[in-house]
Length: 125
Image 1 (cartoon, helix red, strand yellow):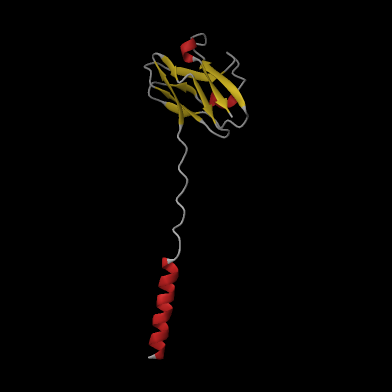
Image 2 (cartoon, rainbow, N blue to C red):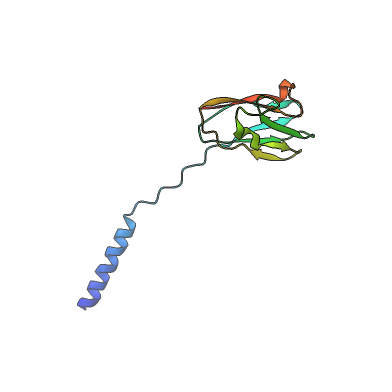
């Protein structure tokens, strides 16, 4: 009888300890993706502000190719992380690299560099 009582008390102690535990914290929500969409009207939005370490997703919703690169044209040397987007065929999307320096990075369509509707900037803070 004593053995049964001891086993019962041990079981109750284990259950009580389990019930008193606080639930594990849920993972932090992923920050919203910053997106620039390319359409027949140009890029939208033309300017975005992001946190350091973030990336920007470019989506080509136009009916023609767009080759997105960093300013200045044709060297694309200001922000090399922007050059990871490159050529986007209709319906394609691609992210930049991570922006790790505080700065403003201009971008344009390499194949249409003077078209202001296809120019914009990314501000990394």
